[in-house]
Length: 221
Ligand SMILES: Cc1cc2nc3c(=O)[nH]c(=O)nc-3n(C[C@H](O)[C@H](O)[C@H](O)COP(=O)(O)O)c2cc1C
Image (cartoon, rainbow, N blue to C red):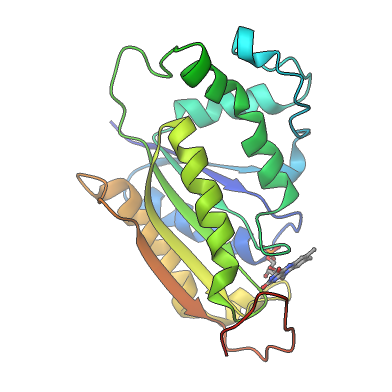
């Protein structure tokens, strides 16, 4: 049966660098006969968690917006490709809001003790894509940690990460064919490997554009 792959584009910029990469990765998955779908979170209305704690007793989020529709796809898919550029050393607010709203899954799992997939052990996999304007590899630490914690909640295994530094203006990524090739390859591998690896494959690339921005916390040269 063909695997269902959902790409989640978390940049506010349509046609931006991470959008291009997630589309490439989906094309790679599709070339391995997966069924693919792209969700751009900027096109949905998803508020951050309000910490009302209603989900701790119901397992459901009472907020009335587009989250349930996205959650349904997130739970139904076999593989996710999360594309989140770095904003202030972290994921974008769009990505963060979606992740925070999964607190209802955390409540189901750890408070209400309701298994997410009661009848079956699911092989669910994730590829992470991130791009950053500066050259510091530290930029991707926060996104990796956030993803790790979230994947425990949504019961998915981190298979690969594609991190590209020194990519800033819209379309810069198109001048970087090796990043496009890697996105395609990792997208394909996401669905073809018989077993998810014990450790994610991490590909780090540099755009080679001039880096004029020194941000606090940067220590690589
Ligand atoms: C609000 C904002 C914050 C940013 N913060 C960082 C940052 O902390 N570190 C960095 O390397 N790049 C930072 N960038 C640059 C983006 O990561 C970069 O432009 C990236 O290519 C955007 O990807 P996109 O085209 O997919 O949106 C920031 C950009 C914006 C707009």
